[in-house]
Amino acid sequence: MTDLRRIDLRGPARRTVDPRDVLPRAGADVPAVLPAVLAVCEDVRTRGLPAVLAATERFDHVRQETTRVPPHTLARALDVLDPRVREALEEAARRARVVHQAQRRPDVRVQVAPGGTVTERWVPVRRVGLYVPGGLVAYPSSVVMNVVPAQVAGVRSLAVASPPRPEHGGRPHPAVLAACALLGVDEVYAVGGAQAVAMFAYGTAECPRVDLVTGPGNVYVAAAKRALRGVVGIDSEAGPTEIGILADAYADPDLIAADLVAQAEHDENAACLLVTDAPALAEVVDQRLAVRVAATVHRDRVRAALAGQSATVLVDDLDQGLEVLDEWAPEHLEVLTTDARERAARVVNAGAVFVGPWSPVSLGDYLAGSNHVLPTGGTARHTGGLGVDSFLRGVHVVEYDRPALAAVADDVQALGGAEGLHAHVAAVRARIPVPNAG
Image 1: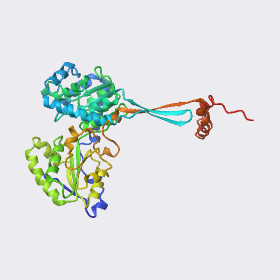
Image 2: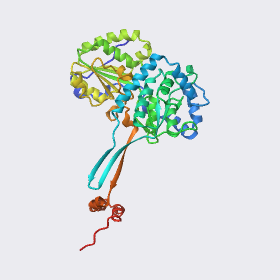
Image 3: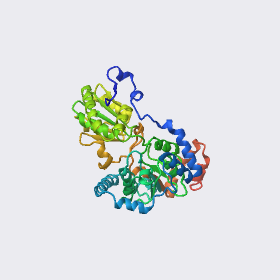
Image 4: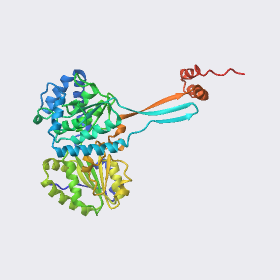
Protein backbone atom coordinates (compact mmCIF):
# COMPACT_ATOMS: atom_id res chain seq x y z
CA MET A 1 0.00 0.00 0.00
CA THR A 2 1.56 3.28 -1.10
CA ASP A 3 -1.41 5.66 -1.08
CA LEU A 4 -0.63 8.68 1.04
CA ARG A 5 -3.17 9.30 3.77
CA ARG A 6 -5.36 12.35 3.25
CA ILE A 7 -5.61 15.36 5.52
CA ASP A 8 -8.49 17.53 4.36
CA LEU A 9 -8.15 21.16 5.41
CA ARG A 10 -10.75 22.49 2.98
CA GLY A 11 -13.92 24.34 3.83
CA PRO A 12 -14.69 24.74 7.55
CA ALA A 13 -11.43 22.99 8.52
CA ARG A 14 -9.55 25.96 7.08
CA ARG A 15 -10.85 28.07 9.96
CA THR A 16 -11.12 25.50 12.73
CA VAL A 17 -8.06 23.24 12.41
CA ASP A 18 -4.53 24.33 13.35
CA PRO A 19 -2.22 22.69 10.77
CA ARG A 20 0.44 22.10 13.41
CA ASP A 21 -1.99 19.83 15.27
CA VAL A 22 -2.59 17.48 12.33
CA LEU A 23 0.48 17.56 10.07
CA PRO A 24 2.82 14.58 10.54
CA ARG A 25 6.42 14.66 11.74
CA ALA A 26 8.98 11.95 12.39
CA GLY A 27 7.63 9.44 14.90
CA ALA A 28 10.73 9.39 17.13
CA ASP A 29 10.92 12.97 18.40
CA VAL A 30 13.72 14.57 20.36
CA PRO A 31 11.98 14.66 23.78
CA ALA A 32 11.29 10.92 23.53
CA VAL A 33 14.99 10.01 23.27
CA LEU A 34 16.45 12.73 25.49
CA PRO A 35 16.71 10.58 28.66
CA ALA A 36 18.83 7.95 26.90
CA VAL A 37 20.92 10.60 25.17
CA LEU A 38 21.55 12.49 28.41
CA ALA A 39 22.89 9.28 29.99
CA VAL A 40 25.33 8.79 27.11
CA CYS A 41 26.49 12.40 27.27
CA GLU A 42 27.03 12.29 31.02
CA ASP A 43 29.03 9.09 30.68
CA VAL A 44 31.29 10.73 28.09
CA ARG A 45 31.66 13.81 30.30
CA THR A 46 32.81 11.77 33.28
CA ARG A 47 34.78 8.94 31.63
CA GLY A 48 35.88 10.38 28.31
CA LEU A 49 37.33 8.00 25.73
CA PRO A 50 36.33 4.74 27.47
CA ALA A 51 32.71 5.91 27.44
CA VAL A 52 32.90 6.73 23.72
CA LEU A 53 34.37 3.30 22.97
CA ALA A 54 31.71 1.58 25.09
CA ALA A 55 28.87 3.46 23.38
CA THR A 56 30.32 2.66 19.96
CA GLU A 57 30.39 -1.05 20.78
CA ARG A 58 26.86 -0.91 22.19
CA PHE A 59 25.18 1.08 19.45
CA ASP A 60 27.30 0.48 16.34
CA HIS A 61 28.47 -3.06 17.20
CA VAL A 62 32.09 -2.12 16.59
CA ARG A 63 34.83 -2.79 19.15
CA GLN A 64 37.64 -0.24 18.87
CA GLU A 65 40.93 0.50 20.55
CA THR A 66 41.07 3.99 19.08
CA THR A 67 38.56 6.40 17.56
CA ARG A 68 41.00 8.31 15.32
CA VAL A 69 41.19 7.23 11.69
CA PRO A 70 44.86 7.07 10.61
CA PRO A 71 45.90 9.54 7.89
CA HIS A 72 47.12 6.72 5.64
CA THR A 73 43.61 5.23 5.72
CA LEU A 74 42.19 8.54 4.48
CA ALA A 75 44.78 8.76 1.72
CA ARG A 76 44.13 5.18 0.66
CA ALA A 77 40.37 5.79 0.49
CA LEU A 78 40.96 8.69 -1.88
CA ASP A 79 43.39 6.69 -4.01
CA VAL A 80 40.85 3.93 -4.65
CA LEU A 81 37.79 6.16 -4.98
CA ASP A 82 35.88 5.72 -8.23
CA PRO A 83 37.21 8.48 -10.54
CA ARG A 84 33.67 9.43 -11.55
CA VAL A 85 32.67 9.87 -7.91
CA ARG A 86 35.80 11.93 -7.30
CA GLU A 87 34.95 14.21 -10.22
CA ALA A 88 31.42 14.67 -8.91
CA LEU A 89 32.69 15.49 -5.41
CA GLU A 90 35.16 18.00 -6.84
CA GLU A 91 32.40 19.69 -8.82
CA ALA A 92 30.07 19.70 -5.80
CA ALA A 93 32.82 21.31 -3.73
CA ARG A 94 33.53 23.88 -6.44
CA ARG A 95 29.90 24.92 -6.69
CA ALA A 96 29.48 25.02 -2.93
CA ARG A 97 32.61 27.13 -2.61
CA VAL A 98 31.34 29.65 -5.18
CA VAL A 99 28.05 30.07 -3.28
CA HIS A 100 29.62 30.19 0.17
CA GLN A 101 32.41 32.59 -0.77
CA ALA A 102 29.70 35.07 -1.68
CA GLN A 103 28.44 34.82 1.92
CA ARG A 104 31.72 35.97 3.48
CA ARG A 105 31.15 39.27 5.27
CA PRO A 106 33.65 42.12 5.30
CA ASP A 107 34.44 43.91 8.53
CA VAL A 108 32.36 47.09 8.85
CA ARG A 109 33.69 50.26 10.50
CA VAL A 110 31.11 52.88 11.47
CA GLN A 111 31.87 56.37 12.72
CA VAL A 112 29.21 56.98 15.33
CA ALA A 113 30.43 60.51 16.13
CA PRO A 114 33.61 62.48 15.52
CA GLY A 115 36.35 60.54 17.28
CA GLY A 116 34.10 57.54 18.06
CA THR A 117 33.95 54.36 15.98
CA VAL A 118 32.50 50.87 16.27
CA THR A 119 33.93 48.18 14.01
CA GLU A 120 32.17 44.85 13.57
CA ARG A 121 34.76 42.17 12.95
CA TRP A 122 33.66 38.77 11.70
CA VAL A 123 35.82 36.25 13.52
CA PRO A 124 35.75 32.51 12.71
CA VAL A 125 35.17 29.95 15.41
CA ARG A 126 38.53 28.49 16.45
CA ARG A 127 37.70 24.76 16.32
CA VAL A 128 34.69 22.91 14.87
CA GLY A 129 33.41 19.35 15.04
CA LEU A 130 31.64 18.36 11.83
CA TYR A 131 29.21 15.46 11.98
CA VAL A 132 28.64 13.32 8.89
CA PRO A 133 25.85 10.72 9.18
CA GLY A 134 26.46 7.19 8.01
CA GLY A 135 23.84 4.85 9.37
CA LEU A 136 21.68 3.55 6.52
CA VAL A 137 23.68 5.09 3.67
CA ALA A 138 26.96 6.93 3.20
CA TYR A 139 27.00 10.72 2.85
CA PRO A 140 30.26 11.96 1.30
CA SER A 141 28.19 14.91 0.09
CA SER A 142 27.70 15.94 3.74
CA VAL A 143 31.47 16.20 4.09
CA VAL A 144 31.39 18.82 1.33
CA MET A 145 28.45 20.67 2.89
CA ASN A 146 30.11 20.85 6.31
CA VAL A 147 33.73 21.43 5.36
CA VAL A 148 33.45 23.97 2.54
CA PRO A 149 31.64 26.75 4.48
CA ALA A 150 33.91 26.19 7.49
CA GLN A 151 36.98 26.56 5.30
CA VAL A 152 35.57 29.64 3.57
CA ALA A 153 34.85 31.15 7.00
CA GLY A 154 38.49 30.63 7.97
CA VAL A 155 38.11 27.98 10.67
CA ARG A 156 41.61 26.74 11.46
CA SER A 157 40.86 23.42 13.17
CA LEU A 158 38.35 21.00 11.64
CA ALA A 159 37.49 17.53 12.93
CA VAL A 160 35.02 15.15 11.29
CA ALA A 161 33.12 12.36 13.04
CA SER A 162 31.15 9.68 11.21
CA PRO A 163 29.76 6.35 12.43
CA PRO A 164 31.98 3.26 12.11
CA ARG A 165 30.62 0.37 10.09
CA PRO A 166 31.44 -3.30 10.76
CA GLU A 167 31.48 -3.99 7.04
CA HIS A 168 34.23 -1.41 6.59
CA GLY A 169 36.55 -2.72 9.26
CA GLY A 170 35.19 -0.46 11.98
CA ARG A 171 35.83 2.68 9.96
CA PRO A 172 33.36 5.14 8.41
CA HIS A 173 32.34 4.51 4.82
CA PRO A 174 35.36 4.78 2.48
CA ALA A 175 33.60 7.42 0.37
CA VAL A 176 33.28 9.62 3.47
CA LEU A 177 36.96 9.15 4.26
CA ALA A 178 37.88 9.91 0.65
CA ALA A 179 35.85 13.13 0.70
CA CYS A 180 37.68 14.22 3.86
CA ALA A 181 41.03 13.58 2.21
CA LEU A 182 39.93 15.36 -0.95
CA LEU A 183 39.12 18.51 1.05
CA GLY A 184 42.28 18.37 3.13
CA VAL A 185 40.72 17.24 6.42
CA ASP A 186 43.04 14.80 8.20
CA GLU A 187 41.40 14.71 11.65
CA VAL A 188 38.63 12.12 11.35
CA TYR A 189 36.98 10.02 14.06
CA ALA A 190 35.07 6.77 13.69
CA VAL A 191 32.34 7.81 16.11
CA GLY A 192 28.63 8.33 15.53
CA GLY A 193 25.43 9.20 17.33
CA ALA A 194 25.08 11.06 20.60
CA GLN A 195 28.52 9.90 21.71
CA ALA A 196 30.12 11.80 18.81
CA VAL A 197 28.45 15.05 19.81
CA ALA A 198 29.46 14.49 23.45
CA MET A 199 33.03 13.69 22.39
CA PHE A 200 33.21 17.00 20.55
CA ALA A 201 31.61 18.92 23.41
CA TYR A 202 33.68 17.54 26.29
CA GLY A 203 36.80 16.28 24.55
CA THR A 204 38.60 12.97 25.10
CA ALA A 205 42.20 11.78 25.34
CA GLU A 206 42.18 11.54 21.53
CA CYS A 207 39.89 14.41 20.49
CA PRO A 208 40.32 17.92 21.90
CA ARG A 209 37.01 19.64 22.62
CA VAL A 210 35.52 21.93 20.01
CA ASP A 211 33.70 25.25 20.11
CA LEU A 212 30.93 24.37 17.63
CA VAL A 213 29.26 21.19 16.35
CA THR A 214 27.55 21.17 12.95
CA GLY A 215 25.98 18.66 10.63
CA PRO A 216 22.86 16.55 10.14
CA GLY A 217 22.10 13.28 11.87
CA ASN A 218 19.39 11.05 13.26
CA VAL A 219 17.13 11.92 16.17
CA TYR A 220 19.82 10.90 18.69
CA VAL A 221 22.28 13.34 17.18
CA ALA A 222 19.64 16.07 17.21
CA ALA A 223 18.82 15.31 20.85
CA ALA A 224 22.49 15.42 21.85
CA LYS A 225 22.89 18.80 20.17
CA ARG A 226 19.89 20.09 22.11
CA ALA A 227 21.19 18.65 25.38
CA LEU A 228 24.71 20.04 24.98
CA ARG A 229 23.84 23.44 23.55
CA GLY A 230 25.58 25.89 25.82
CA VAL A 231 28.40 23.47 26.57
CA VAL A 232 29.17 23.74 22.88
CA GLY A 233 27.68 25.79 20.05
CA ILE A 234 25.46 24.07 17.49
CA ASP A 235 24.18 24.98 14.06
CA SER A 236 20.68 23.49 14.31
CA GLU A 237 18.87 20.31 15.26
CA ALA A 238 19.11 18.75 11.82
CA GLY A 239 17.30 15.48 12.44
CA PRO A 240 15.24 13.13 10.21
CA THR A 241 14.79 14.61 6.78
CA GLU A 242 11.57 16.01 5.31
CA ILE A 243 10.10 17.43 2.13
CA GLY A 244 7.05 19.57 1.48
CA ILE A 245 5.69 19.94 -2.06
CA LEU A 246 3.21 22.62 -3.09
CA ALA A 247 1.60 21.56 -6.36
CA ASP A 248 -1.27 22.74 -8.53
CA ALA A 249 -3.34 20.83 -11.07
CA TYR A 250 -0.72 21.36 -13.78
CA ALA A 251 2.18 19.75 -11.90
CA ASP A 252 3.62 16.49 -13.23
CA PRO A 253 2.41 13.71 -10.89
CA ASP A 254 5.27 11.43 -11.85
CA LEU A 255 7.87 14.03 -10.87
CA ILE A 256 6.08 14.53 -7.56
CA ALA A 257 6.11 10.78 -6.92
CA ALA A 258 9.79 10.60 -7.85
CA ASP A 259 10.68 13.37 -5.40
CA LEU A 260 8.64 11.85 -2.58
CA VAL A 261 10.36 8.49 -3.05
CA ALA A 262 13.77 10.17 -3.24
CA GLN A 263 13.26 11.82 0.13
CA ALA A 264 11.71 8.75 1.74
CA GLU A 265 14.70 6.57 0.87
CA HIS A 266 16.87 8.51 3.32
CA ASP A 267 15.21 7.13 6.41
CA GLU A 268 12.03 5.36 7.50
CA ASN A 269 11.51 8.42 9.73
CA ALA A 270 11.56 10.78 6.73
CA ALA A 271 8.47 12.97 6.47
CA CYS A 272 6.89 13.69 3.08
CA LEU A 273 4.05 16.15 2.62
CA LEU A 274 2.21 16.93 -0.63
CA VAL A 275 -0.03 20.01 -0.39
CA THR A 276 -2.38 20.62 -3.30
CA ASP A 277 -5.68 22.21 -4.27
CA ALA A 278 -6.18 19.53 -6.93
CA PRO A 279 -7.70 16.26 -5.57
CA ALA A 280 -7.41 14.63 -8.99
CA LEU A 281 -3.64 15.26 -8.93
CA ALA A 282 -3.39 13.54 -5.55
CA GLU A 283 -5.07 10.43 -6.96
CA VAL A 284 -2.65 10.22 -9.87
CA VAL A 285 0.33 10.79 -7.57
CA ASP A 286 -0.74 7.74 -5.56
CA GLN A 287 -0.81 5.70 -8.76
CA ARG A 288 2.67 6.86 -9.74
CA LEU A 289 3.93 6.19 -6.23
CA ALA A 290 2.84 2.57 -6.46
CA VAL A 291 4.96 2.10 -9.57
CA ARG A 292 8.00 3.98 -8.31
CA VAL A 293 8.04 2.42 -4.85
CA ALA A 294 7.88 -1.08 -6.33
CA ALA A 295 10.86 -0.28 -8.56
CA THR A 296 13.11 1.47 -6.03
CA VAL A 297 16.00 -0.28 -4.29
CA HIS A 298 15.11 0.75 -0.73
CA ARG A 299 11.40 0.01 -1.09
CA ASP A 300 10.88 -1.20 2.50
CA ARG A 301 12.38 1.97 3.92
CA VAL A 302 10.36 4.11 1.50
CA ARG A 303 7.11 2.32 2.30
CA ALA A 304 7.69 2.82 6.02
CA ALA A 305 8.27 6.56 5.59
CA LEU A 306 5.29 7.06 3.29
CA ALA A 307 2.98 5.03 5.54
CA GLY A 308 4.25 6.68 8.70
CA GLN A 309 4.78 10.43 8.89
CA SER A 310 3.69 11.37 5.37
CA ALA A 311 0.44 12.64 3.87
CA THR A 312 -1.35 14.54 1.14
CA VAL A 313 -3.01 17.73 2.40
CA LEU A 314 -5.99 19.01 0.44
CA VAL A 315 -6.54 22.77 0.53
CA ASP A 316 -9.05 25.18 -0.98
CA ASP A 317 -6.42 27.14 -2.92
CA LEU A 318 -2.68 27.64 -3.23
CA ASP A 319 -2.68 30.62 -0.87
CA GLN A 320 -3.94 28.34 1.86
CA GLY A 321 -1.42 25.73 0.75
CA LEU A 322 1.40 28.18 1.28
CA GLU A 323 0.03 29.05 4.72
CA VAL A 324 -0.09 25.36 5.64
CA LEU A 325 3.51 24.80 4.56
CA ASP A 326 4.69 27.90 6.41
CA GLU A 327 3.13 26.40 9.53
CA TRP A 328 4.87 23.06 8.89
CA ALA A 329 8.18 24.82 8.09
CA PRO A 330 9.76 22.02 6.04
CA GLU A 331 13.44 21.34 5.67
CA HIS A 332 12.97 21.21 1.89
CA LEU A 333 10.11 22.87 0.02
CA GLU A 334 9.43 22.29 -3.67
CA VAL A 335 7.09 24.71 -5.43
CA LEU A 336 5.56 23.04 -8.49
CA THR A 337 2.98 25.54 -9.67
CA THR A 338 2.51 27.58 -12.83
CA ASP A 339 3.58 30.69 -10.89
CA ALA A 340 6.37 28.90 -9.01
CA ARG A 341 8.89 31.76 -8.89
CA GLU A 342 6.41 34.32 -7.60
CA ARG A 343 4.89 31.92 -5.09
CA ALA A 344 8.30 30.75 -3.86
CA ALA A 345 9.19 34.39 -3.14
CA ARG A 346 6.36 34.43 -0.60
CA VAL A 347 7.67 31.47 1.42
CA VAL A 348 8.58 32.44 4.98
CA ASN A 349 9.43 29.18 6.76
CA ALA A 350 11.61 26.65 4.95
CA GLY A 351 15.19 25.46 5.12
CA ALA A 352 15.58 25.67 1.35
CA VAL A 353 13.12 26.34 -1.48
CA PHE A 354 13.29 24.58 -4.84
CA VAL A 355 11.51 26.41 -7.64
CA GLY A 356 9.90 24.68 -10.60
CA PRO A 357 10.20 21.20 -12.14
CA TRP A 358 13.91 21.47 -12.97
CA SER A 359 15.07 22.18 -9.40
CA PRO A 360 14.46 18.95 -7.45
CA VAL A 361 15.64 18.48 -3.89
CA SER A 362 18.07 15.84 -5.15
CA LEU A 363 19.92 18.60 -6.98
CA GLY A 364 20.25 20.51 -3.72
CA ASP A 365 21.57 17.41 -1.98
CA TYR A 366 24.57 17.33 -4.28
CA LEU A 367 25.29 19.96 -6.89
CA ALA A 368 23.04 23.02 -6.71
CA GLY A 369 25.72 24.90 -4.79
CA SER A 370 23.34 25.45 -1.88
CA ASN A 371 23.94 23.74 1.46
CA HIS A 372 22.00 20.61 2.32
CA VAL A 373 22.53 20.84 6.09
CA LEU A 374 19.13 22.33 6.91
CA PRO A 375 16.81 22.76 9.91
CA THR A 376 14.21 20.04 10.45
CA GLY A 377 11.29 19.36 12.76
CA GLY A 378 9.76 22.81 12.26
CA THR A 379 12.89 24.65 13.42
CA ALA A 380 13.01 26.43 10.05
CA ARG A 381 10.64 28.92 11.71
CA HIS A 382 13.64 30.39 13.51
CA THR A 383 16.80 28.76 12.12
CA GLY A 384 18.47 28.79 8.72
CA GLY A 385 20.66 26.30 6.93
CA LEU A 386 24.38 25.82 7.41
CA GLY A 387 26.49 28.55 5.83
CA VAL A 388 29.55 30.69 6.35
CA ASP A 389 27.73 32.72 9.00
CA SER A 390 27.34 29.54 11.06
CA PHE A 391 31.11 29.56 11.63
CA LEU A 392 31.53 33.29 12.27
CA ARG A 393 30.98 35.53 15.28
CA GLY A 394 30.42 39.25 15.11
CA VAL A 395 32.78 41.04 17.50
CA HIS A 396 32.31 44.78 18.11
CA VAL A 397 35.51 46.78 18.50
CA VAL A 398 34.88 50.14 20.17
CA GLU A 399 37.38 53.01 19.88
CA TYR A 400 36.64 56.53 21.19
CA ASP A 401 39.05 59.40 21.79
CA ARG A 402 38.79 61.76 24.76
CA PRO A 403 36.62 64.44 23.10
CA ALA A 404 34.19 61.77 21.85
CA LEU A 405 33.86 60.29 25.35
CA ALA A 406 33.47 63.76 26.86
CA ALA A 407 30.62 64.49 24.43
CA VAL A 408 28.50 61.67 25.93
CA ALA A 409 29.69 61.72 29.56
CA ASP A 410 26.59 63.53 30.75
CA ASP A 411 24.35 61.05 28.91
CA VAL A 412 26.18 58.12 30.52
CA GLN A 413 25.71 59.77 33.90
CA ALA A 414 22.00 60.25 33.27
CA LEU A 415 21.41 56.65 32.16
CA GLY A 416 23.71 55.10 34.75
CA GLY A 417 22.03 57.11 37.48
CA ALA A 418 18.58 56.09 36.30
CA GLU A 419 19.60 52.44 36.50
CA GLY A 420 21.32 52.85 39.86
CA LEU A 421 24.68 51.73 38.43
CA HIS A 422 26.77 54.46 39.98
CA ALA A 423 30.10 52.70 39.43
CA HIS A 424 29.39 52.82 35.71
CA VAL A 425 29.11 56.58 35.97
CA ALA A 426 32.25 56.75 38.11
CA ALA A 427 34.24 54.79 35.50
CA VAL A 428 33.46 57.50 32.95
CA ARG A 429 33.93 60.40 35.41
CA ALA A 430 37.37 59.05 36.30
CA ARG A 431 38.26 59.96 32.74
CA ILE A 432 35.98 62.95 32.21
CA PRO A 433 35.45 64.81 35.53
CA VAL A 434 32.41 66.96 36.03
CA PRO A 435 33.43 70.55 35.15
CA ASN A 436 33.81 72.90 38.13
CA ALA A 437 30.69 74.97 38.66
CA GLY A 438 31.09 78.69 37.79
